[in-house]
Amino acid sequence: MSREVATAAMLALVAAELALYYAIRSSEKVRNTLSKFKVSAEPGAILLEIGKGVNPRSASRSLRYLLLLASTASTVFSVYLFYSTVLSYVADLFLSVARGRPAPQSPLVPVIPGITLGFEILPPLLVSIGVGLVVHEFSHLIAAILNNVPVEGWGVGVLLIFPIAFVKVEEGAFSKSSLTVKASVLGAGILANLAVGLLSLLAVSILTQPLAGMLEGPYMVVVGVDSDMPAGRSGMKYPAILLEINGSKIQSLDELREALNKSLDSRAVFKIKTIPVETSVCGYYQKSSRYEEYLVVRDTLDVERYGYRIGIVVVPEAYIFSSTTPSYLLYTECQLRFLYIVNVSLAIVNSAPIIITDGGKLLTEILRKLKAQEVDKLVQWTTVAITALTVFMGLWHSLSGI
Image 1: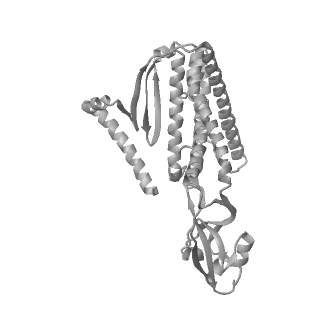
Image 2: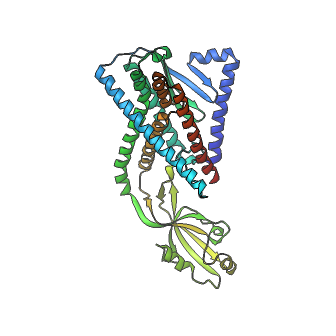
């Protein structure tokens, strides 16, 4: 799918969500019709209610204590990861500014297709976000049921282009629950995301070994071609493995320089042989089974302007997956890697005390119990400020690189 088609499809989806929201708000007939199918809409989101009215079940005390212990430990660990990452970045940022150095790369980068990430990784990313949110929300549902908290309903939906899930607990019953019950329910999603993330990481480590045996190399890989220089004028395509120049094998930068340094005082013609490289999902390079040849002409004017260079950007000693590597293995490895990244990220972000997150709600409940609401506001709004700064810097770096 081309960049233009992907962009048009995303904009069409968002426009449809906004149009549906407007139709529901302005027409009672549309609202009643969609309600029969349990469909509702919010600005930029479409929601589908799947289940309704789950009766709570009181689990054994040992099971509830185990859930409380695991949820609390997961939340504390994730909060530690959040603050150690964000505060370390903010300290480095101010130190860099004070010393007049470039700002360091932010650890928090917003997900904006086409800007902060390429469209080629959008499918595994969307699957990972969908899995992560479904696991997160339904873990809240299970924890609520086990702790005798009624659940009003649950469902799935789409927010802009991202899949989402939701669970509605009975607010009155939840607010009257003990602090331990609230900690179990709020921390259950964080626990589930960490578990899925770690299991995905384990699966990646298992899959890495057979995939490593399918790598070939090292190769000299052309990853860029200047259209105004000799190689670009020849129509050379990239990425590609650089095999030969005028019959001589090229296996290092020194051999490349030696081949191009010939005939600097006159017109030179280079017969360059390459193997096209296909870029699969996640940007993995896979060797193709065909060869291509180019006649690259470098005249004296090129030598005056560029020296021995012909306008190619080369990565030396690169390893590439063979042409016989199953595509499904590459996609599976990529998908598992994204499941790990997305789920661990969801756990860390949701544990942070940022008002609307699980961590923010849990901190409010704890400090309300201690009658320290002012401390709650100070901690949460300070965290919001440093998080906003970190995300802004991540977006700024991404925009600067376009």
